[in-house]
Image (tube, rainbow, N blue to C red):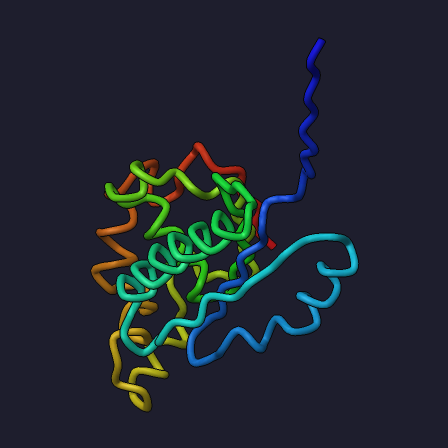
Length: 167
């Protein structure tokens, strides 16, 4: 008689933290510490918000692919991530998870929005006077992205295969 055994550790899906306009992942330092005490692994996606939502969505896509590969090389199999997003980071995550390219990866399980201006931000119109960049222009309520692109995407720019919460 021959027998064998295999040990498997079950872990929570990694939590991805995505910052808003003109911030960095350091805004989530305290939250990361808290999650680590509860047994979650976390990482931030730092993107250049001034380049706009679509560039941010591309950075999210690449970051998730890289992190999945890193975890696989460490012996951790991950198929989906949980995301916590703030402000413009939530718009970039919505764009990514509602894009045609997302269907190939299907790598987001939950998406939490913290103070995300889903219909744009009136303050962005004022901000455009001071910060003339793609990021602030994308957040204006009348921008093509907010008024036309997101509403024309999967389920109005909110992928219904992902559990979502809005705070």
